[in-house]
Length: 279
Ligand SMILES: C[S@@+](CC[C@H](N)C(=O)[O-])C[C@H]1O[C@@H](n2cnc3c(N)ncnc32)[C@H](O)[C@@H]1O
Image (cartoon, rainbow, N blue to C red; front, side):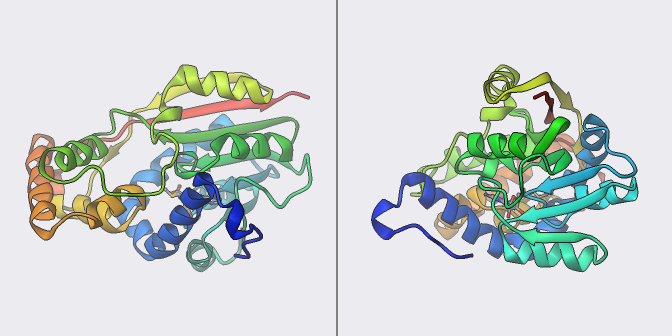
């Protein structure tokens, strides 16, 4: 990606954006296997929320390997997927060669105003340096009457809670990282509704999706956290080997309450927000 900013005008948002970008380029080859079976579960409710059907011009922002894009195409929607990580776009093109995927930034969408009937973002917003800019961009590229939906993790998503607690209790939770927006900001329905209304969206609805993760083993959960994402992965990689082993053991112990190996069933509730662009 071409960086048009001068060195001297680099802000903390820029630093976080670049940190996330580099992280997703690295995580792309692990992400689908690590989290795909989990994040793809929100595809149908998200597509229902934007009334995706045959002929709907739909943009999947921060599409990753294209789980939502693929499900939308199966409904007959006319799909474009967009992601800022070239390695993610490559994964999506490989999985779904018949669909259109392009590199681009959620915070500055490369589309004319009013291009789409529906815009979706599945677990992308919580990774953005400037989520408000991305919401405003989604509003801009929707036609009047177009529908928007995004998902984020609930604060009750067990695997993240266990990981954060294990890091606090057994490691260093203050690994220096570029400062980013609060991971759970949009998990709060009131904050989400207020923000979407401020941008000009109407018919705002926020609800919880009670999805669950059934990974093949507790190790698969730890590996997903270590390799398949960015922020938590960076904190884990910043630990000493001893602390990392203690964190892994604590996560394993915490997961015992949710079954063993192939029987694991981990509550990972998500929050689905949807809205309409009126004018
Ligand atoms: C957790 S993954 C979600 C992938 C996919 N939507 C899914 O359903 O699994 C987050 C994705 O957001 C992308 N992303 C993060 N910041 C972005 C930005 N500013 N613009 C476009 N994509 C971004 C990452 O490259 C990554 O593919």
